[in-house]
Image (cartoon, helix red, strand yellow):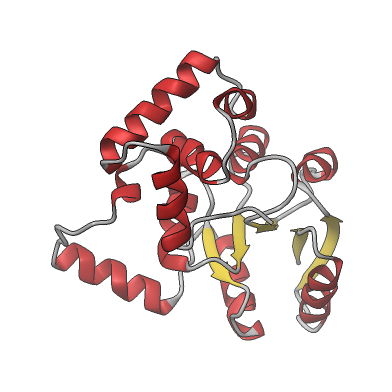
Amino acid sequence: MINLFIVDDHAILRRGLKQIIAEVPDMKVIHEAANGDEALSVINKDVDVILLDISMPGKNILDLIKSIKAGYPNLPILILSMYPEEQYALQMLRYGANGYLNKDSAPEELVIAIRKVANGGQFLSAVMTEKLLFSFAKPDDSELPHKKLSNREFQVFLELSKGKRISDIADEISRSVKTASTFKMRIMEKMGMESTAEIIQYAMQHQLTMSK
């Protein structure tokens, strides 16, 4: 039996996922939570796979993945998202997630993804996998600037794209204002930008904004 933990702030979506899982004989939803903080308070060793929404109120998704992996390093995390796979999937996997699935996917693909990560594998859609194989076979010199960022830089980039102040971002990432400012400077240097407005415009243009 694969015990699942659904973490999503939309009650209707959680109910829909539970209905899909209820039809699979060897899967069962044992916990559900509406945000990251609640998830961390409920999670336990009985969970086999976490189905995790990419954008929820409260704890940043990257920090949430990090916190989960700190306590349960071998626990598979399957990210569920409405955001484009090509924009976020690799960042999520780099930070510790085990799979990425768009919420528009068919129920059958969800079941396949759960089985894949539960058995120790990683899951990306066939389309995304093909794109990755193509990129390895034929390197693209026009790689998008945000893909040059480190995991922490990408996290700060996402917060900047929401228009947050440096002091608030420093609190978000548990670092000093000086350190947060250094991250911002590195981001702007790597991406060839000169202002926060450019970061916000870029994030909107490439559908990278994660605010509700």
